[in-house]
Image (cartoon, rainbow, N blue to C red; front, side):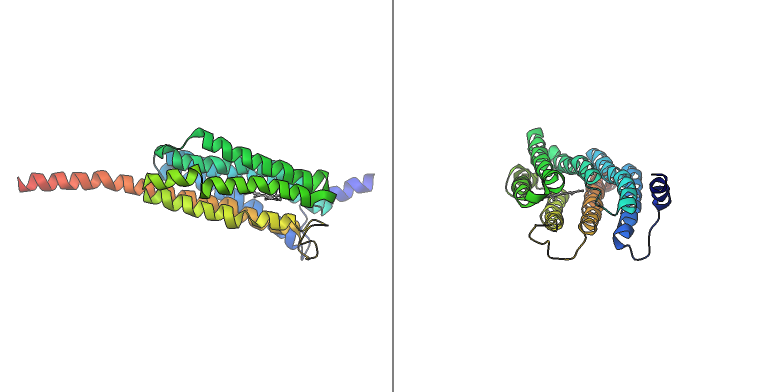
Length: 260
Ligand SMILES: *C/C=C(C)/C=C/C=C(C)/C=C/C1=C(C)CCCC1(C)C
């Protein structure tokens, strides 16, 4: 018992040479942390509702940073997947990404019910994913299929449903660009997760020698930081467009004054 405790103590924070997965837990932690500081500080550079969008981007990476801190230690001690922390993190951050979509379309008539639909689909996706990955691993394929229905629901909403319709009706260049880029993250970036999930023994890709945490860690870095950066660049572009507008008006007025 004592040796177990001592070993546990010694292993905390110890990264062994060649531990690629452990490496990505450290990198992931630091990158999420740095991204949060960036998003929070940049709030002052943008206008109006974009401030809230940047706050949410910062919260997403901050929540992830805290969970990476715990996941990293658990992984180093046990060399097992920290599945519980992983799903707690996703349960908080994925709905916040749905809120980001809502925040972007809200000024153009986006409805709160659209946000709740997206959140409901994401909770469905994650609850059944967790059942398959932790509680009933021998049936992971079935639970994975059920979970995928939630993922498809999100894709439907953003590619064909409310989010698409309102973004198109907005005729606002930076909103359209942000929505179409964020959609790509959900279609391509989020597809990394079911691929990782299929590495579970008995899954479609279980024959492939690839660590599931490596896949999830790479997915998280792309999707949480990349997603936040897209929101950030839309925020900057939109705020600059707004700042330029009054300047042009003043210019015109002074030109008129001059000609009079
Ligand atoms: C920051 C974390 C993100 C964006 C996590 C996203 C997670 C998913 C899109 C997970 C999807 C899954 C399926 C579609 C089926 C198999 C089970 C999951 C939960 C891995």
